[in-house]
Length: 80
Image (cartoon, rainbow, N blue to C red):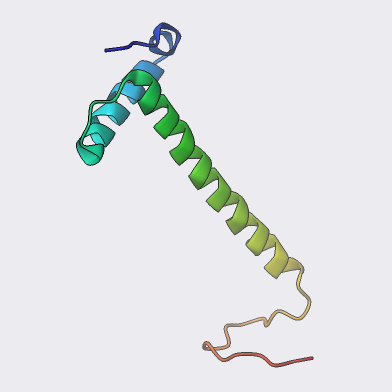
């Protein structure tokens, strides 16, 4: 079992151990700490991208002068 000494110094080691526990079961193979660290990094990055997209959509809707002030009950707009 490979341990990342620097990660263990600041509590990240516990997170890596938990990630290993969760993902080993799902992947059906043994993982080393570096595998778990990469998985954590990728999952965190994925949700970061989703957050950025959500913020961008919210800002775009707020800045869109043509956006309806209230919901349109799912009807499509065909303004030109």
